[in-house]
Length: 437
Image (cartoon, rainbow, N blue to C red; front, side):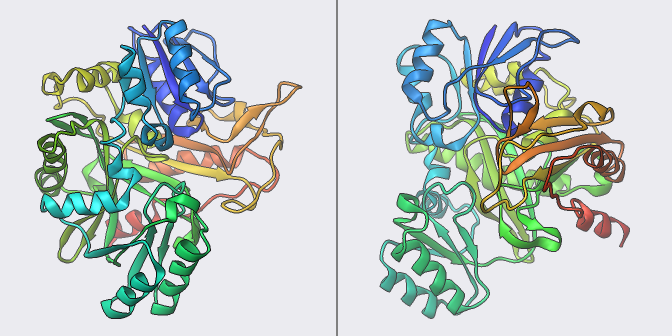
């Protein structure tokens, strides 16, 4: 089978890495890919090569898929999903994995998502949605509790402002609604109650009616240790298949499935919007129970990089089962390794603000006990692997427990170098402290 992967980040590299292990996959094309997604066949994996088509050039992607007789396209980033890439592929008779444009509104419009959750009694924070500053500021002043201000549309994971005071919330509203810091994505804002508790990410495969949960993961959004500094796309993550560091107990997993995941998929179906693809629920485990912080309509990044190494099964079979509506045929009992997996992101100096590009990366060949998933990398004229983005790569390692996985991931990071590289040194630290207390 010939497969097309759309995207260029660490998530896409992980998808290529896992799909290349399927005996049904002959070769993989990646548009546009990065320095890590191009390799020759061998060592039990199919060949992969990059194609110079941007992830948001939907017409060019459809044309290419037709010309190359692509049998399955897997969409990584949120923007092409929000722009309707699955709809376009379906219209010309091509299979694409991911939700339709209307279904992807669960991520592309926070106002749509919150209203949907309200209609279907899915637990989430109290909120208000506004398009003008005066109404929004009055809501903040009257609310009486700390809030989070969110740009309604897609803002590359950076359109969320966690506010400690009313003045901070008013300043966030000014930046988003008046100064248009996030452009069209901030034409509307969602203001919601600031929840406290432990965060977790739970992803599930969906076929329009059923869901198949993945092991829960935890992302680290803030750029610096101790959750300080601005939000990023994610500075590291871990996933626990071993119950000693479980993010969610089996009972809580069942609760989330029954109160969040299934009601969402079946609620979308009831509204005439079948949801097929990945449903990512960002959760807060509050003293009052589980609450949904947000939905994403695709594989998370960097969660995907620490979840897929624990998958025993053929990923291709699961993706096809989602598309064909027969996810219930997948045996979920032996699907996942009972281990832990951890990933540490190495970022460019200055990220998430301005940062240099084109800096040579050394030490990649020295890593033996971890997998390096490339994100913001490319190859220069001399054939060197160089930096090309804010989040440059993520070092991922498995272990019998979380401590072993983190040790291996950090050892890999220490072997890699590029000028200005920085990374968090506390990935998983909270979980380790909780387990020992």
